Image (cartoon, rainbow, N blue to C red; front, top):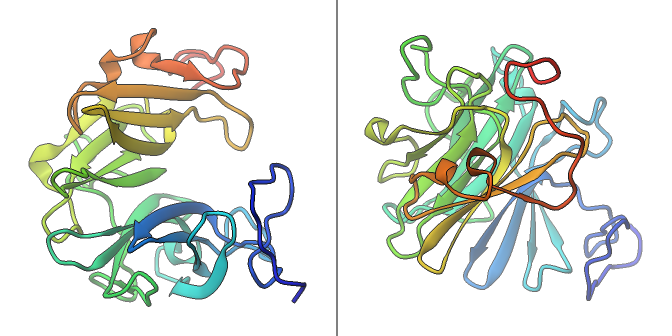
Length: 276
């Protein structure tokens, strides 16, 4: 390995090396702060072909300052499930469940036909994590879905969020279908499933992804990007008084929220030419 890396600043545009001098390999990452330590979980994809769609599993890095990161190894291994979802474990998100004290990971499996959810748990943030349910194919849809999607919702880009006041946990995700849009739900007490009665469509369009949720000044803030593949796209900011409130009512443009950062050419409305 190259000489150990110790950063004291974020260096935009440079390859970010870990403390062993190797490029950080944690794509589509999720972060957890626990006991004064930051945990960075992400897909292990360096050296894979194609790197966009296959990985070795979920890598973990730890840091105390967000600059220098130490590789802790794979905490969840990719595998060949019957639906092929196990070959690509994407966008892992981990919380410490208030109800059980366990560390719970929600991760997306991405097969060509569908994007499905798998849940894994561990007694420690450093893993190893073990899938909940069928160990040979733990992937499934979310909740019961709508009248036309009785098998449940697909699980696209997503995040987990815990209310810092109550410890109650929520999932926010893109269902990938215009009929079901972008949704949010509260998790069960053990954080391994959703409460069906909390099912909330936050946006009619499914063209919102990479969500991040924060609580500040007695309000909930939801950041999402548009959907343009790997091309640059808009960033939208919404706010609501409750965790599953009317985010769609906020912003200067309401359903588009506040547009933040770089703006591409105008995106056609859903179901119109250029945005099917």
